[in-house]
Length: 504
Image (cartoon, rainbow, N blue to C red):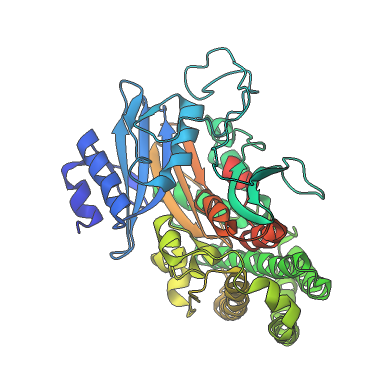
């Protein structure tokens, strides 16, 4: 099988692309890369449209065997490009979004339906030619044939304070035959808002792409900016970023474990993990001045330098969770009624996880060992020892155990960071010049991609963010098939995909 570099060899390397290379390709090379994706030799990291320098599409690719990343760029002078989705289904929703936002047509695409455009924007193709808006009409869900089938529509408005999403179940009795999700209700146009912004303001937007991953998004965007401008952040800033990433991972995993157990009617676990999550947020608030650490990571470094008292609070947090978390793990493992709900429920096969490039606990619960922290160059993660837990079962229980093991790894990483954290500056100034950069950061859900291009004045021409949920939401649909409708909340929570991160 051809390696990534061999496929893109006929293309023209773009000067000034920081972080990872970008290559200008022709339609034949673009299609060859798509064919390689379909064969399973490469992993799709992202696919997005662009008009900042004429109509273009970009495809970020990962060669896992070689630990290499590169972006292929194809000009679209006729407003179209060869579909990747007809060869590699994980690209289908990304192509639908490109059509909705930029008006670039994926020729041969297997799914012509809109994705983000619900017919209510007032314009069509808002990042394209901006013609008058047109009503979208009823959304054509995929048909299902068979006897004794009925449909159960759920959402987009749900009970509780959660984001909107519509789920259309087709069931035979209680058994789900097909689930199809309709998302896009929380689209905010972040990519449009970034255009013309300063790096600082664009970073604030990036940090709000998905609030529970504000540190990971801010880190990804900041690293893309720094790669594009050739900036190296101070030692202390890099280590503080890593500390914040692990604290964010810790808080979210604790909350998720409890919420999964709560959906299985085991509220006791939810209460105890909720207390521990609150302990994390309080320590974080004391150290960084914000419980979610929003706007604490900025291009060029970090905005806050915690004092000794704040770092002592984090160290005390590690000791407390190390004491109180193991009994909760034992409680989870020894509660038969809980295991009966989680073991074997909502399984994702290893082949499907690999095909979709599923990241984070979703991929690692199904045998895919990829972790973007292993690609962090000369950053702090290269100097810290940690394991990447992997299981094969791919069910709700496996996704819980991956979170448990990652909590243990995060506690060890936080302790190691505190031991190595040296005094020094935490921020450098950015130059104002043209450039572009790409970065990949491991958030608690999985890898987050950021790409940014600047004009000569250092303002953003085009910014792109890609959430792990783009490649995880389709797996929710696959995982619930053959399960009962009543297990959907449990299965869905074990994925905990981001609505906002999907819709941007």
